[in-house]
Length: 425
Image (cartoon, rainbow, N blue to C red; front, side, top):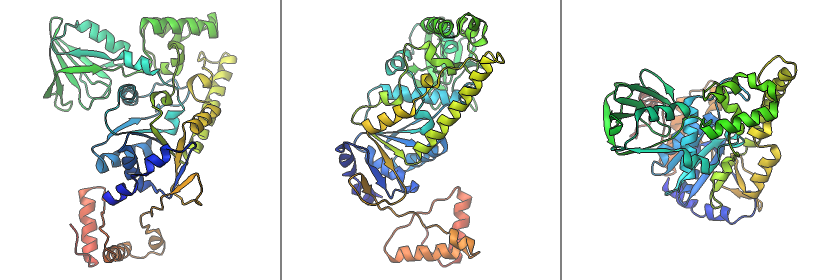
């Protein structure tokens, strides 16, 4: 692995010196965690995956291959365009946690993983994200009712027992909450209006696991219901949809400071302006995308246009009180994306080899052996695997076999020993 990483030491500099997008050819999916780790060793590297499943798989592999590198994930909303449902609290909290990290000073190498759907969606301004964190510490005077008001206004859901991000519970002098960007919930113990202690705890058994000195508390909703946001929303909604819109459930709920499912789809109306994820990156950041991202974006835009047309048609026929915003208010257009991709530049990563040219860097990394032909011929796959391992060993290679579980690992080892593979560790 170290030989592979050292062979890529020059790559980031080569890509930084180019004036246009490059294609890294011959980079199978399995090698990309190592590729990103090598590139991120000298700064921030951004990778746009095709979808959330690909992003999550890559993040899991990076935590194993490069545990010393900070990995941030920025997922897309997990709801349909123009939906009456909101994104899940887990997704919203992860998005805001990542935006908050990106809006602060980067310390050390960092990898940012996102998706085609996420990168074309407009987001809160960086300065807005920097201003919304609530900083509290043990010993602070902070009335519990003020904290509860903050939590309710910023997307937290009140429950009896906290178990997931975006939830809080209040009982007596204790307030439990699970903040965005944290791996465990926090328990605040008040004495009157003073915070006596901050402690992390295990949501499974509710037992304390440690003491915390300070806490930067982020919202878990991108729709922030402060007085200015509500005022902006009310004025813009009336301006765009007229007096008839004032009876809409979304208008009435936000006017009263109440959260309503699906309200995030009117987010631009509550903000002074919207940004894109690119506004959080520096000129020195390296951005790459899977070659299938362009097609994924086209499919998502088709879906957005279809849902917008259906909502708009229902509104015009007075069959619905759902008044959709124009797609350009919420999403990057195809032209905006192309301008960004060319100006940044955003480099492509392909698993296939391509003819060498001034815009292609051939990595020539071989894909892992595929035993599909043996399966198709109903041959013994374990015998083929055993022979392949013997061939690699004869060539002086060390082989790492990964399994889904300890049980799978045990069964695989047994099968290989049955085929005379004895040097297993």
